[in-house]
Image (cartoon, rainbow, N blue to C red; front, side, top):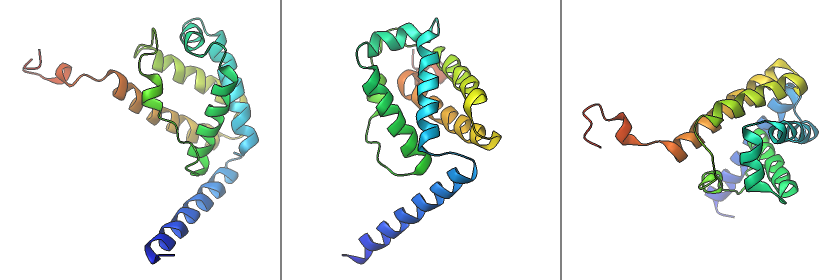
Length: 155
């Protein structure tokens, strides 16, 4: 194997080992991630504003979505790189998705973590990560640089 590839593989292994140790220290394992996703999306489905948006998009495909979300959060937490989805593309064109739904999604996620997180550090880690992801996704889907133009040149 080429020395650069060997070094890259060793570095990736080290990153995954550090992530696994960090997650273990705050009480996160694969079972917790599955429980978090299941509990959270159960609450999403019952939410008066989020539920209909998700249901319209995922009707008949909830099981596949749940598996994908477990894989996503596991990949993020354990730095496995196993999730190969494209979140921005997946959310483009979702009927009735608006920027004001993101704070509701985050509040519901925080409530779910309050109920199921194994430690305050786990809640902090997941909320910090969820906030970063939500901000990135919202910017990707809804940001219009013309609205930031103080001179109004973009109008």
